[in-house]
Image (spheres, rainbow, N blue to C red):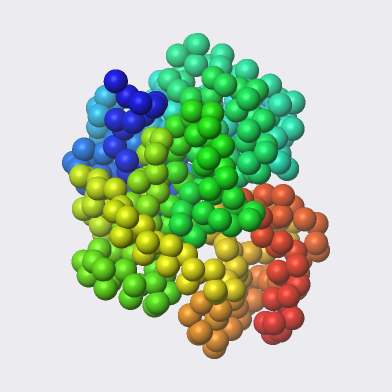
Amino acid sequence: MERYFGEATPKLGFGMMRLPKLPDGEFDVNQICDMVDCFLDAGLTYFDTAFVYTGSEEVTRKALVERHSRDSFTLASKLNASFGASCESEAKAELETSLKRAGVDYFDYYLLHALQDSNIDKYYNYGLFDYVREQKKAGLIRHWGFSFHGTPELLDKLLTEHPDAEFVQLQLNYADWEHPKVASRRCYETARAHGKSIVVMEPVKGGRLADPVPAIRDLFRAAAPDASPASWAVRYAASLDGILTVLSGMSTLEQVRDNVSYMRDFRPLTDEEQALIVRAREILDAIPSIPCTDCRYCTKGCPMEIPIPAIFAARNRQLVWNQSEQGAEDYRALAKKGNVADACIACGQCESACPQGIEVVARLAELAEHFKV
């Protein structure tokens, strides 16, 4: 018998958010098919998409649903009341649309998407907690939960009021474990105190932990020369108790092969390896970088269409990698294409959407001055 819901589920999940694209901007369907096949061949089964991941549900249908038997995989999608809908009826219509896009009759896992303190009223006002319960009874959802980017206090409130939520999706990685705004540890402990299973998102923090600073890369290489930096981050998350699965937003076949190599037969971190993770966290904490994961939630409603994550990436190139001129050149290239930091009108939409709690408006003002073009 399982100690918690999903204990027997393979501990690596395929996040269908950062899929590869061709030069013309279309999805590289052939490579995605190879990625899906490699993942399934390793005995892994959990795939994750969402209504607001542009094109993701459709390409999931092409690469997965139309090519493999329905009992060979499980599929998760999400309802987003903040970005995908302007009223209750539009929010509730997302499930039907997602089912059609994905080409399935039901979702194994369905989540209310990106709940946080700034948007939770919409989910209550639209009656979406009752809605997912109804759809579960109707057979369109097998299991329901929610993904969460808010405070531990709000998480405790939600799980107290909705004890039938079967799982919670949280941002858990070694860089954010003690982050005061992301509060990975406190949110994790809150969910487990309520007995909830956890799906992990952002285990490599938008790729930042897959390509870490040289000091961390050297630290891990000395301990395990053949292990990728990403493997340390994913195994760290998967080693926690109560984990249903750990999502990795894989973008290439090589990334799938690497993840599969150490997660096919998952081995939790040893005490010695956990000590190295603590050291890696200390190294990261000493670097004054901008904690952007390139989720791009901030750009969806930006009235000035500012490429905020790309601007932050240019600055991080300077802060993290000491590549001052390259970062400046990246920013100049962005400025040639459209609005950059100095176009910000300080409306604050980006800050209400940011899962990392970044003070985006202040950062853009700072970078407009820093990158004067």
